[in-house]
Amino acid sequence: MLDIKFIRENREQVEQAAKNKNIALDFDALLELDKERIKLLQEVEEFKSMKNSLNDLIKQAKSEQERNEIIEKGKEIKTKLEIKEPQLRKVMDEFEALMVRVPNVVSPDTPIGKSDAENVEVKKHGEPTKFSFEPKDHIQLGKDLDILDLEKGAEVAGYRGYYVKNEGVSLMMALMMYGMNKMIEKGFAPMIPPTLVKGGALFGTGYFKGKEFDPEVDEIYQLAEGKGEAGKEKKFLIGTAEPSLLAYYSNEVLNEEKLPLRVCGYSQCYRSEIGSYGKDTKGLYRVHEFMKVEQVVITRADVSEANNLQDEMIAITEEIHEELGLPYRVLQICTGDMGAGKYRMFDIEAWMPSRNGYGETGSASNFLDWQSRRLNVKYMDENGDKKFAYMLNNTALPSPRPFIAILENFQQADGSVVIPEVLRKWMPGNMDVIRKK
Image 1 (cartoon, rainbow, N blue to C red):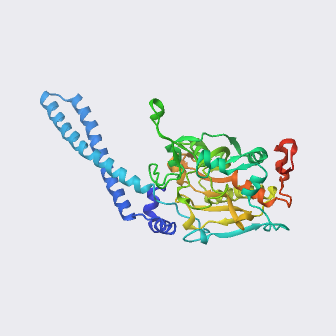
Image 2 (spheres, rainbow, N blue to C red):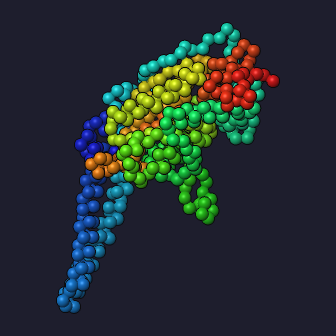
């Protein structure tokens, strides 16, 4: 969420950001509501002040007549408040409904574009894998090696369901252990956060498009409300550890000396993928449930520092891809492919032979204070002023897509798959190859 003062003073810039992000928003209506909101706030506060003053005057009244006159005046003010307060609530609701949809501005280096077709490749590492034999996709490899069962997954879990089996489990868990240990080595404090959260964590981090969950557009699973205590609060499954990790600091005033805070989280992730019907329907590329190691950073309100930290986070993910031996590229995401709250964004994509192209394995976003205003996360600067912190996030390592890339890039002519060296210490007996049984 942006500061309304910033919107007033930079309307043209914010309107242009909305246009570039393909977000339709009536800024005239927003600013008119803002004026009405301020006017009603002033009136309500004035009436409340008068009411309090009259209460004091009643106590000081010198005669019954004077006391009655003051009481009558108080009744008039109460009647006016009974009219103005509902008006204020209505205007505030309408104002907030528009405010939560206002997008963040974008960095000067962000490409302007309408869709993902206009994202810009800024780096490429390694060459696409070439084979002297006819390579298989991860679906066939998983079946032949008895480490993946998609048929039973669909039968038991439904669309996009899957079972990982045998050495596949060891490989997937090795990825998670490697990813978490890498983040700890880089100075990130580890957490296993809750995956079942209240709506505030998801609204605060921008995973609701509006003020409340909308099942038509939000790719979030809402749990059915239970009875008794279980049914009192709506609960949701997270799609990444980011909301839980950042919400950990909600309503706090942080010590500037401890910034930047670097935190990583391991979690199960759940995504409804409602906007991807018909896309990537085969295999593990786009699934409803997976594991992931996520990295987040909370820092001072300094754009240059935040951008440098984002670059640092991306560099860690690049290092992970290089140590896994995966060819990859880095894309800078254009305005039309960015979320509303993002100021600057990059994706990392690994080479996947079955796609004859790259597939996304990570995404790094700088939100500035757009999330911290929703979550109410501040810090006290050296002058004693409270400021909203800047927030960033990046995928360290998800479970399914690097799993795909490893199977497909490291397959051998005999159908076996070589395990990247950095993962072998987490494989049973330091296993270096998964072979057909």
